[in-house]
Length: 355
Length: 277
Image: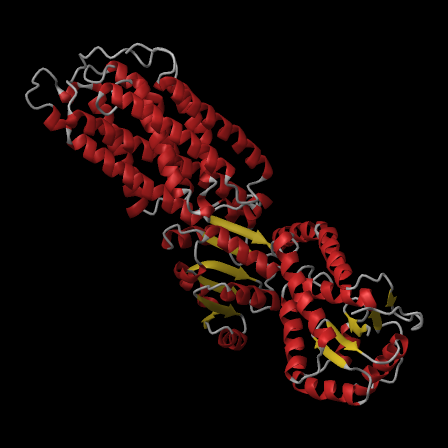
């Protein structure tokens, strides 16, 4: 009985299309029930994240027919009338299994090697399992996918390092401070990236967050979201002695912090190490402050250079990951017959799988 | 002492060879950017330390007392202290690369100790008759120099990591190194340990001079030098603890102070009538 996968992802479609196909978490059991009640699948799992919507199914129908019917189900369920041949893809047999493994390993993710997708995949599988929409084939395939993801994580460097600005900032903070729980963070300028960076620091145990913004209301709002405290924009320097990490992303046309201003503040801080993350363009912090002792300044380019280098290292690991995946998929499904139906490709000619 | 075939010096030579291998391997690790945890260097230094302990034990047994009577023995004692302290600290994985920074220094001290002329035959007529108090004084002060030595290694590691972080070298992020605040703590604690040991060692001087009116501590270059070293480290610790002299300046202080100790140790011993080996 073949495993078939049909769906859309960030590779094939923009968010304006993907959002039309998203399944609400509460709607998943109903959608799975509908899918099976219609006789389109014997077993099914639906994965719906911000970057992909995929139906993993095992059907009694011939593979080509199953894929065509699942595609129609996807369109009908979301009341989409366009055929979207260029956006919806399908994979069957061994390629379908390899696709599942790649998704689990984060190889198909927007951020290569990210681990969040594995949690989302587990959750999707558990939802289907709990409502008895899985069986022997999908249970085996998903359990194997989780096992392969663990093996890939252990044996390769695909998940090593930070590939986002926020996580690079956390990594830098951890190069300076043994434990973030003893250090306070200040955010100046409540932009999206600074918020993400602050959240990343909080998730790694940062003591607390102070937020300062020209619009005090926005500062209060963000401080509430981050469980921190808002500080008046005119008074942020007064809080400086207590902080060890500063994230700045204001839209000021000039520097808000320079060497002359920072020198006395460092004395007030008793020269403790200070990490300055300047993600504003134009920059908020005069680069010359980096020449002060115990001050470490990183701007957006510095952070992106580190993230880029980590990403390059991850890309170098893809071949090793794919070799593990091919080996595991091959062991589970020895037949090489498989099919890959890409955007707009004909749905006939799908091979049968042995799963 | 007559140096015959296969003496404690030969065993120490093997230890120095192990330290040399560790130093070469450390260079390789540095070139690789310290990206992965490494146990080889720790193992090689452990092997060297076992050999050195054996060598010191052989010497101690032959003398029937703590082997701290000449420059060779003093240097091996300092070397041993640095390696032993590292092997304890290096049990914590993130600090294990301290060994890579320490190995060249350990090797250099070992090679220096093996130089001819530093290990003269014991005449049995040292300036001070060997007794437990003398051995304790020597052991405490040499242990303190070992602690100062390792603190300077931690200082070098701090300066390297600080430089990489300051100038945005990717190695600063990719290397499996401890955070710089931890390196500063290690440097500070080793300095405190060394300072307390030195204080204890120097505190024994009045007892050593009891009934020895021919020795004038105030005019002995080694005693003056030791007092200077004591004040130097006291100043470093006070500046760090009380006047927020932290980070790079503190690390440089630890490195420069130990450099002063190493570069003047031999000369001041030659000048001192009470420490002339």
